[in-house]
Amino acid sequence: MVQTRTSNGRYGDELFGHERSDERDRLNALTHTYDEITFARLDSLPIRSDSRCLDIGAGTGTVAVSLADRASSGRVIALDRSTAFLDPNTRENLEVMEADITTAEFPPGSFDVIHARFVLMHMPEREEVIRRVVSWLAPGGWLLLSEGIDPLSSTSPNNLYSRLFAGVWDAMHRSMGTDVNCARNYPAMLAEHGFVHIGTDVHVPHVRGGSPMAEFYRVGGSQMRESIIAAGHLDNNEFDAGMALFDDPTFIDFAMGMISVWGQRG
Image (tube, rainbow, N blue to C red; front, side, top):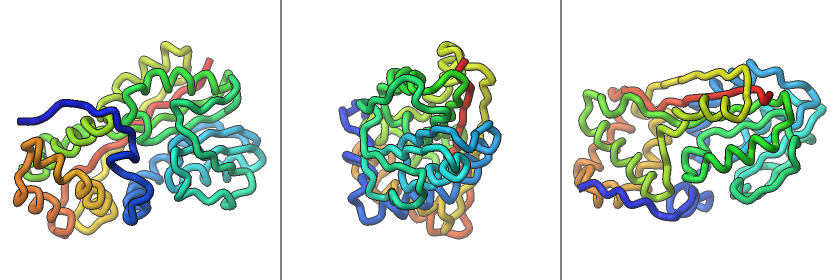
């Protein structure tokens, strides 16, 4: 029987901690798949050379560095609960800040551009966080939020892949409150906060055995083995067979999508 209890844990506590020897590899695989799309979204925004930017949940810093290059005479803060993978010397206009977004404080209107990717989906208090983030954005500033979305794994012709991902999302929800559908509400939320020029986009890449995306799934999924099996999604042998798909070059299917929502503060 599938469990539904949600713990009080946070991202990086039970799952995806930066102290893990394979965590940098997992994040690098993620950026390899999604950075191109994020950079295209940033290219569509009128980021000035003197813009003040905030990258929330900066991870390995690829997006923060991209912002620093765009705002070359401005200022970029790369914020994360753990800055283990962030180099403060990458760009002169890039500042690394170790802080929890739920308690971090900035004066109203501190930033012209704020970005967060695959962050708020793991936070049950995301609506309150968005409210606080909006207050940090200057009038006329731009907010870009991107989250994971999974519209297709449940209909996969590969039963193991479908059941594995049902277990993955369930394990993440119970561990830290992950909601893979949370961005469905973002356009309306931005409109309620007075945003204009609201835009949306969904990108769904594929995963193939041996690819960077497959490595991302293999490393992350291995951390959830006990939880997925205990919840009854798969037994031990089925879990092993499901994970083996990510090493099989003949396997190909749709991967987790990225849904992006952006707008300008009125």
